[in-house]
Length: 273
Image 1 (cartoon, rainbow, N blue to C red):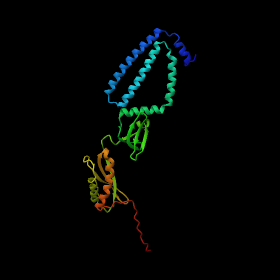
Image 2: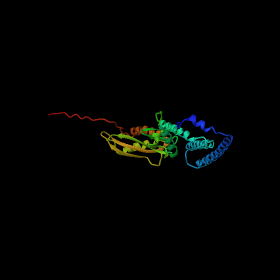
Image 3: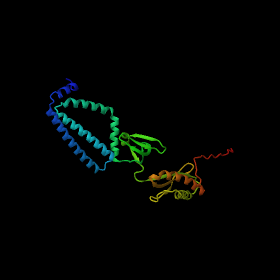
Image 4: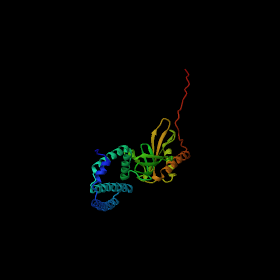
């Protein structure tokens, strides 16, 4: 007989079934259900005291419940003198096939559990992963959904996400805004810095601490580059970023500072030879 012959398995298992065995199995089942209920209650109490995400607690409870019910089924079957060797072998082969077929899914699930338990980011955080940035809209076991600044919904597999470098721009509560501008070599440095400071003063929602700053950052081929730093709350980042950009242009015009662009000066020298 083959080890996986279910017909032979069922035939030999129930051949010697008696009322006594059935009553004994029923009593065993009742005891198992009582034990399962007690274990699940204890598990719920312990998980509620932990710092795990609520969804992770739910998944753990579901997994424990599944394992307990499988153990209970095996115990009840053993009390009925059911030969579990062939059935266990069949389940092992089946579970192996399912595991191989669902390798990516299981990897995503494992990654989702890592994300939910480690908390590298939360709902509403603005993050960047492998060049893709956006606001976290949903964290599931399989995927994490990001809403990009240009309104696109991106689904990132948790398997890839959990193993990648994640930049969280929101977790600290504030962000630094950086704007780079160029000015003519003819413009005095202090005049350019004064224009930048006026632009900062006219931009709302900028934090006083840390303080804003203006630096001469680079000498270009046809202009001097200045870098303007300021800080704001994470929620106000885009308002401050675009507002400062507009105010810089207005401040440069008010101070008579030329905001240059790349150009090439050509000098023609007359050959008098």
